[in-house]
Length: 201
Image 1: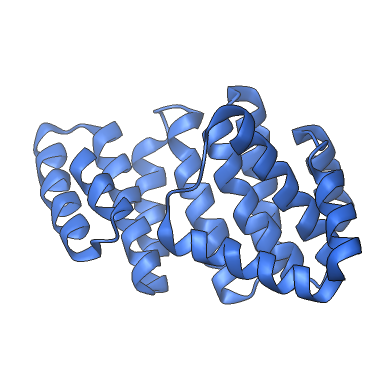
Image 2: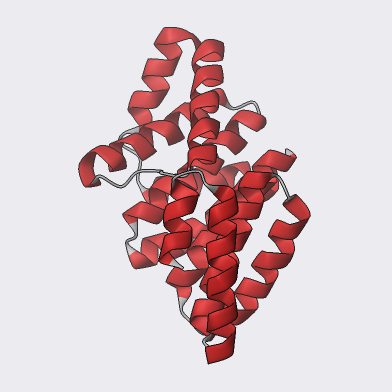
């Protein structure tokens, strides 16, 4: 399972899929619900990167069923993947609602790593809605946490999403408005982000 995540992070989707599939067979043989759910989530992540959107949803549904008793931390990756999926489908409101649910759990768990990941689909969804200043604030919030904690996005496909969102938002806002919004985001908290999400939704 760990090797599956390593191969995914390295961009080797076929090898990651094979590792996760082998791991899934073993966890099912052992009747390990936690392992089964976690590996199914890994397979969903690979399917998302490969553009197999229908498979993503079925894998995440199966994973959520397996993980329902494992605790909130184990469901975070699934929420993140669902949010990215909705961004890729152009469904900004759904992506924002999923990030809202994720942030509620992240606040309870104090998970900075999950926080940095969750902000990428949030920024992308804000840009999809045409709210470039909000997208810039979200990017600023994420960058501050990375600088303070070292938590960073290693998902290459989503790194590209983040870079493209920043490129587009910078271009549309111009230097002064980008700097102002981005700087404001660097003082944002989870609570203030959630309030902004509630206002938008």
